[in-house]
Image 1 (tube, rainbow, N blue to C red):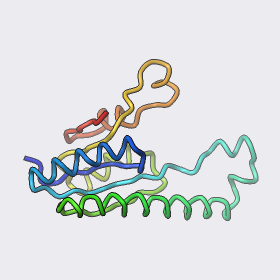
Image 2 (cartoon, rainbow, N blue to C red; image 1 turned 90 degrees about the horizontal axis):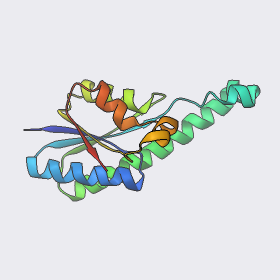
Image 3 (cartoon, rainbow, N blue to C red; image 1 turned 30 degrees about the vertical axis):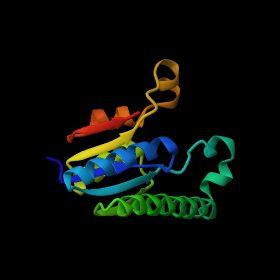
Image 4 (cartoon, rainbow, N blue to C red; image 1 turned 45 degrees about the vertical axis):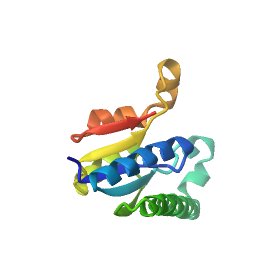
Length: 149
């Protein structure tokens, strides 16, 4: 069935539920996992709030470095869980990308046969205001997507 599963995580409790499902599935199927975290684009609202901040190369580099360190910690912790379960695993961090696009592109690039992603299952105004990365992944992906709630 699935020999390569890509699981997206941001390190949150909800994302960890998705990770647990992916690890369990990979173990059952003797599949490998690629654990992915995507750090979003530098916030553009700084242009309106404080124009000098958003254009400062130092501020951008601080942001990038901080996000890379956080991503590395998230991925390493998830890799540890997969290894503890005896699953073959690799980690990946994509920076400066919208999460949904980064997830779908990584699945294609790394030839994953299944994407596992967690979702809050928001509806109505909350979905409109907060968006849904899972819904966007579902709409963009050419491979099956397992959404964990």
